[in-house]
Amino acid sequence: MPLKAITSRTAKPEPKPLVLGVELNSTQISIALVDNQARLIAERRFATPQRTTRATISAIAQTLTELAASKERETSPIAAIGVSVAGLVDPSTGRVSIDDLKGWTRVALGQLLEESLDESGHDIRTTSAEKRARAHHVLSGHPPITICSQMASLATAESWNGAARGKTNVVFLSISTDIKAGILADGRVLTGATGVAGAAGWLAVGRELKHEYEANGCLSAEATIASLTRRAVEENTGYDGSMLGGLIQSGADFDTATILRAARGGDKLAIKVVGDTCRWLGRGVANLVSTLNPEAVVIGGEFGAMLKPFLDDVREETRRWAAPEAARQCRIVAASVGENAAVIGAARLAWLKADA
Image (cartoon, rainbow, N blue to C red; front, side):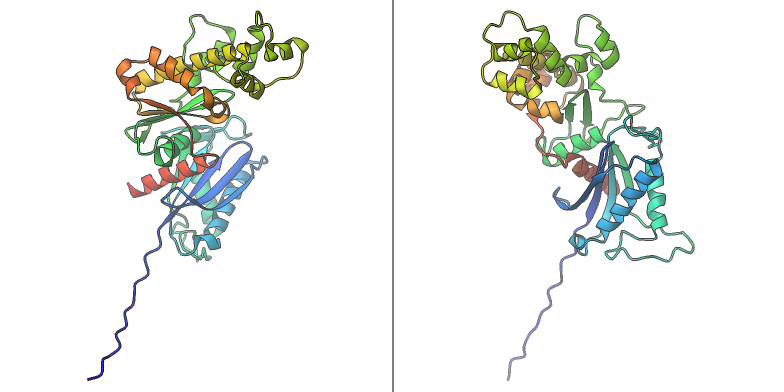
C-alpha cells in the first residue's frame, strides 16, 4: 500500500506587540518603536518646534503615524504610547508644564495628542496605518497614551534594563546644572501631591543659609557643575605646583572636564575640589537612602556621568551619614541605559499601564 505524503503546516508565531516611546524636551523630540526587550526597532529625532504648543504636538503625532507605518514595524501591533516630558506632570490632571518651552504651562498634552492623532485619520494600531472612515468619530485611532515625567522614565528604564535591573525600589539621581530624582517605590512611580516629588536639589545639607541656597536649593548649590568650578576658584590657595591652580591664576579658561582630568592625574587642588563635591553629594544621597530605603541609587545626568570614576567617594560619604541598615543593602551605581533611556522608560511605563 503506497504511503501517503504527510504535510504539516507550522503556524506562524503571533507577532509580539511594540510600544511607541516619546521623549519631549525643550530642544529635541525623540520617538521610537520599542519591543519588550527594551530594544529600539526604529527611531526618529527632530528639533522641538518652538512656534506653538499645537505645532509641537502635531509634529509628534505625525512622527508617531510615520513610525507606525514604517517597514521596521512589520506586522507587530502597537500596544501603547508613552510620552516622557522634561518638566512637571500634574498627577491629578495629567497637565504638563515645561519651563524652557514657550507656551507650555499646564498643557493637556495627553488630550491634545489624542485629538491630533484622531484628526490625522490614521489608525496606528493597524499594521498598515490605513485611513479609516471616521464618519461617526466613534473609534479611537490610537492605543492608550501615558504621560510621565522625564525623571520617572529614567528611573524606570534603569530598573527595567539598566544598572538597577530587576529592582523595584530605585532612585535615579540626575545631576547637571541642577539635581532631580526619579523615584520608584515598590515598582510604582512616586509623584507626590503635585508632581514635585524628587526635587532633590532642594535637600538642605548645609549648616547655614546662603544666598545660592535660597535661589537654587542647597544640594544643587553644592554638588552640580557650577559648584565644582566655583569651588576650584574659592579653594585656590596653598596648592603650589597645581596645574589647575596655575590655570586659574593665569586667567585661562577651564571647565568641569579640566578639573576632573586634573583630579584623575593627581592634581592636589583638583582632588580636594572633586572630593568636597562628592562629599556634599554623598550627604544628599544619604538623606534619600535613609528616607526611601531604596535597593539602588543610580547616578546619571551630564555631571553625574562625569563623576563615575569618583563614585567611591560618594559611597563612602553616604555610608557615613545614612541609616546603617538602609545603607548596607543599597547599591550606588552609574546609569547604564544611555541616551535613549527616557524613550525606553516611557515605553515601559505605557506598557505596564496598558497591561494593568
